[in-house]
Length: 372
Image (cartoon, rainbow, N blue to C red; front, side, top):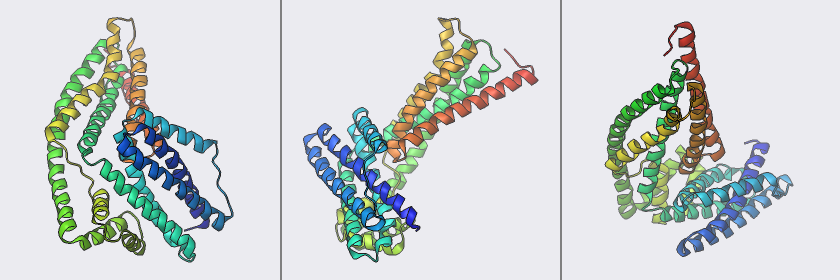
């Protein structure tokens, strides 16, 4: 790994720890009493970790990090999310973030293998992050069904939004009556709801079978053969890009704590979550219809206002972009992705699909003479 690359990683780690320090402290004021104590403790640990990464930068690169305006903006944004999002969402996001931190820190552990003091400092940080991840996993136990239901809702809404918007915008290029376009969008969304509902039901049943089998296997190993969990964890870490000798070191750091081993194997190796198939079907179908509304409703405004298809299409695209931006935030939080990138990616997809289908509709009217 190049020295410049290591420097950038260390700087990113320091920034992440600084943000986490402020965020956990902020959450401790919002959380119930039993969770507040844990958040305060984690905030203090994250502050120590920031100091560690600053020491690493000072000793290795002769640089001392200082909080700039960019870092303050990031911290403010995360606090804003903590205000508008349910606490369970934030805990889930932080759990994913702690897991990612463990993996990222582990990747550069060998960089400091010739400096025992630095190596031990980074090793201690990794161990703390592993404990954090396990603690946060415990906090969201019992909430997986709620989180999965939310994912189904966002999936149904986003899928509908893109599909129905593309349809009505394409029709706007050839149909002059906005009410006809709105009606076509409504009929299509109803038909799509039946398809999405049945698909969600069948896929959820299959996922549950896979999930239950994997969970039972890990639970049996936890009770009967904890040593095998160590091997499973090594393989899971290697699959995540960690060098084998580093993964062995991580497992050695964890030791024989069956709870931590079991939680890490489950979180790293099992992607599915248990979900009621009927609930998944109803949630997906309901939000598929709701997701279509921002694309359809503007065309029905013609019942009350003298607007053209093009005007309605512009309103539909603007409405869909706003909804897509918000759903991108939720998607990023529930998947541990970059929030800003995912939100703007959603908006670009909406705008791109709208432009493409409107162009196709306009070409059909221009070259084929199709217009209604």
